[in-house]
Length: 181
Image (cartoon, one colour):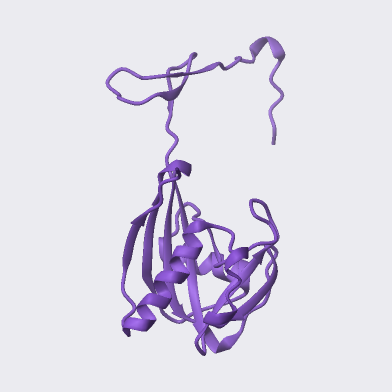
């Protein structure tokens, strides 16, 4: 129930960017109460799922990069593990599950304050369907990957690392940073 607060009792909040005492970075600070609002990087969790040597990709229905292909991934929610977030996003975007997923890539994207945590696993029963955030979901062989239509550099990097590991015969764990120039 929303409380009706008379206008003469409402507090107008004003915020400024400043370096708080004892800190070393500019933060958003409330002028009225001094509360500091910390803005921290977002964690993106997702999966590279494979079925019969093909990778599951989703065509994005939403911006940014609507109409481009990506691995199912998205922002973590509060109170979930990274693995739970990866599984949830994969189900939401691609209607897909995997019985076992393993960490494949952790990639820093400091220019957009994000960290990607990508997992690898086998697509359960070969089943998938487009979710609300995807216009299409499809399995691609290595030769069919629409490289010029991949939505994000980190997704392209994830797929290329996967194929390098396949060639070596060992799927590993990778760590990387993408610096925008």
